Image 1 (cartoon, helix red, strand yellow):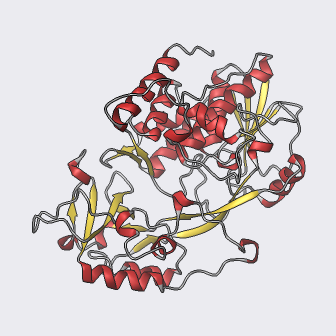
Image 2 (image 1 turned 135 degrees about the horizontal axis):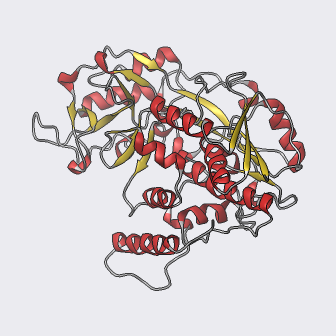
Image 3 (image 1 turned 120 degrees about the vertical axis):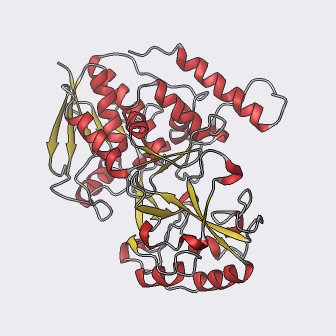
Length: 435
């Protein structure tokens, strides 16, 4: 039986292993947990969610919603687990973290074509086709080896995680349940602010103490899609009110009015015992998080089950290193996948695992590469990270801007245009037989 190696059992690594195993090859899946953990990981389970528990919109008129549908059509194990562990979140797909990781761990460990090898990997070679899925917090020893192997230094940016609150310590008298514009179930707990409350909160936030950066974290590059709330606030007084604290579409049932600003809390688990503060990724000290976030109506006496954190994420210069199959230009038997390639986000990372896993299996089987076209979101991401003409390469989320334009103009506004893009992608994948 032909075989491949996959290094790393995060979302991308698990998806790559699953897709390759489904193609009929033996997969040796290497994972350093529980022997060793990164600074951000705590659970021995596979596909651990470190930041948000939300996979964002389910609507196919959004690029991330379309990407989820594409992955459903490709029998993604990550999407299968997400649906099995889903918790209420309006039009977003949010999951119970532990249930999600447990589902994937069981699915992967019980697969007859997958063998788990525990322990840290310090090097690799191309004796077998190999998928590197070690993520943005690759261990130092392997990180150094990869840097030497690809012949260039890593790029990097800073990522941040939002705090998690004990639901029993929230003052519900000062909050209300609702989803924006009443879309979906009322899954969000909203903390409304008056102008005077926002004034106080804003000024305390922008002047709060931040955790000092470590020596290796000098000259931070903050990724726009996961920006610490205090950095966002410093861009202007109303920046938060047009971002995570946007009150539009939220009516406080107590007075029938739209608040001046709204902080939203999203469920973390199916038992409704935990909430995370939406959009509140932060680098504030723990003491300052308790003090400043305690100014949010309803959170005066909130207990923090997890504080927000910020850490350095590394990624390779993919346009100079990889093909649109996520294989190395200089060595097509070596693949990279996940956030280490510069795709940003849980779902985007898992989608890259689909492409890398299939193609690593095909290399082992002696088959021609499978190229996903850029009329699909999964293909557009692969083409973006491998485009040698990209300047100042930065991590990229799924978006319609990287997808190949429609050949003709669609009348009826953006919604109709995005519907047409989604229909084109789905039509292609319905006839896409790669197995």
